[in-house]
View 1 (cartoon, rainbow, N blue to C red):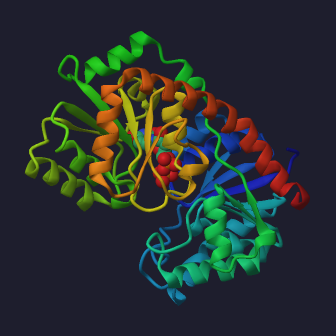
View 2 (cartoon, rainbow, N blue to C red):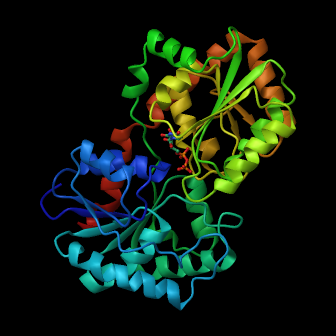
Length: 382
Ligand code: UDP
């Protein structure tokens, strides 16, 4: 992309799925583009290590813009306007402002107005309760219809929630996330064995692993409940409370102790060695209890050539089906336990699902296709 490219805006300094996607995307857009972060943190370091131009405007959190419950009142718009003034100055040397989250979009919408630049919203959320309050959805849709030149949805499910809530269909382009298979291909038998040995699990343990930030939405509690029904199985919980869900993390520890599975539930915290840990496990579990907008971890589990169990809701069914994995109803610990048991009992079925899943992930979710999709979606704006 030529000089004066895209100003990517993200409110988070931590590494959530949206940020990991933007990492690959912004790296592909080259030096004419730039990432502007509204908070400092490991995301900045990750961008810098990929050679992406990054600037931090840590102007205080958008603390009045909350997605679940609060009504975005005048204080939220005052926060956004103050930050938007700074962002708009930056935006003058770019052709397009691209918002990577709802909070970033609120800021970008105002900055675009001040700087007279088109605004693209990469929508990575299902805009519907229980993810968002009804008021918040209405405010977001109204703002998008007024101020977004394009809405890029990370799945058809995300797009359907947007238009279902009144978002203009003409704005929307669906671009699935792409995941680089290279870090998964780089895992050797030795490094996977070493990762497993470091976990100090009993020899021959059957290991399932759930990757995701700690949030009741992600369903760690359901896997714990399933674990209580599976006396031979060990579970790895990989991830951390990224956005203030510390009480939920403590509740999970308490649940593990109360239900007698604490010695088989391994809480590993946020990890950078996801490919090795996936290969150290026998099965990857995705357990979201609300519709998942996309679910990068599902594609990653497939790229790691592990059988994936996922909950049938939202964008998940655009990634995986009964031929390439195992789908179970959300929030159903009995079904989850049964799916785990059936894979443990039938290694050749598990291996077949893993092989078909890997082929599907490689063919359907490349970084190249994601970058091309975003370029096509915004070409006429540049
Ligand atoms: N992840 C990670 N370390 C962890 C847990 C998760 O790097 O300890 C990564 C995971 O590999 C995936 C992303 O975080 O790429 C989560 O993305 P997903 O779409 O599954 O969920 P989100 O957090 O965006 O809701």
